[in-house]
Length: 236
Image (spheres, helix red, strand yellow):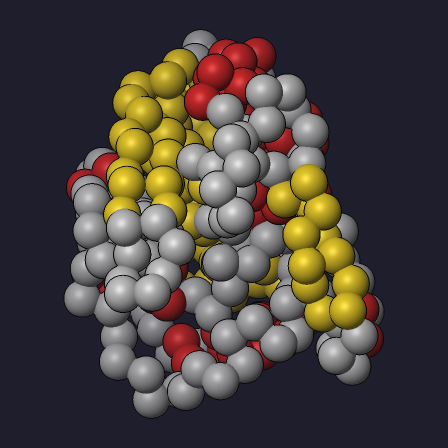
């Protein structure tokens, strides 16, 4: 998933190459996965009942998951937010005709801050929650959710090289490439569970559940741990 960090020009789009080989003819999803390797653990039931509800995916990338939710779960609408120009173009090419799906090229925090109490569910699969400053994004999500609205997100349980997650709210620089192929970095927040719990509580959320999914991965892959949080707005 791609984040929705501050809008950049096409030349500096750090997600230009991510998913570039994906084909518009790629089969549609038949299940929602939250884990790193997209093959185990809980599914769309974590979102709860979204029938006739307003839903947003934060950092939707090519919008495969958002398209699945729009097609199969009966929401009023699914707003797929992504700040990457390249990813927005891919999502439009692949899923632009899916009913109830709105594909928006934008910064998530800004979009949500400008639309208070308009959402019932917000979710992120290794998306904006991983790549945006939680002190900016979480209050924006809290503002956009109606009272009792839900936030569901999956995030890395440790760094990809196996290093334990940060015990303070601080990001790490991870490798990325500019559109012209030049090596660069972007910030990713890989935080320990108590850090996320404190952040959620501090920005007006009640934690509902925290699922840990461990997967040894396909042969030759790195074992990965995913943490999935479900919280609801505690605003009256």
